[in-house]
Length: 264
Ligand code: SAM
Image (cartoon, rainbow, N blue to C red; front, side):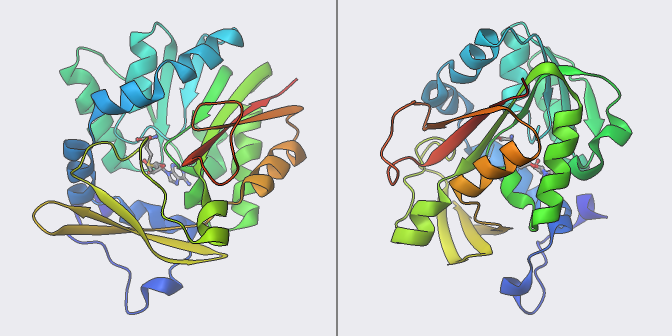
């Protein structure tokens, strides 16, 4: 089972691994532990400020579904800010870690183990907002899976709900071959994240931690315009894209884009 695996397994040809289901075995226990140990939650909170809380409050959202809980950073922030939060993820390793992180901070997470492509099999409620953050959507390797996931997010939203989804600025990497600055999501000096290989359908990142711990993630390099188009095609009426938490930005500068998609 993925939870017990000791090393990531990309087989003989790692660049050939372009499969949506692979996220389950990428987030092995050792990687999740290192990630959480070395990514500084306080620094991350300072970088993001109250951006997501403000967005949610402006839209009058109260009940939030975090579909990419990971180790629980945003779920906990929103719980602390008084939102009613449900925390979903397709990885049991991640959910276990998130639950533990919350419990150590005196919160009990309401968790749901669900893959986005079949989200509504397991999520039987409606939400004011769905959040999919930390460059998570990049794990879907084909167009059909992306449309299916977005349609599932759309379906669990109330008629006036919003989806907040972020992504790394892959356009800059694909077009200009520049290394992102990693200010926002890999806070601290302990983690070095570099694009080891990039083409139009694969971004393979290398994550180096002290003590020669090296992990990889094979992701799909989402172009900003494509994601905006997908959001509109699944039915969202208005899509606003921010660069590194600002409304105005130069296209090559931001590390991350944040899309706020409104259902009505
Ligand atoms: N949002 C967290 C953060 O910012 O720290 C976690 C981000 S982590 C990069 C991506 C998360 O998405 C992982 O926890 C992974 O298990 C989850 N994920 C990837 N593909 C998924 C899918 N198809 N269905 C459900 N969860 C998925």
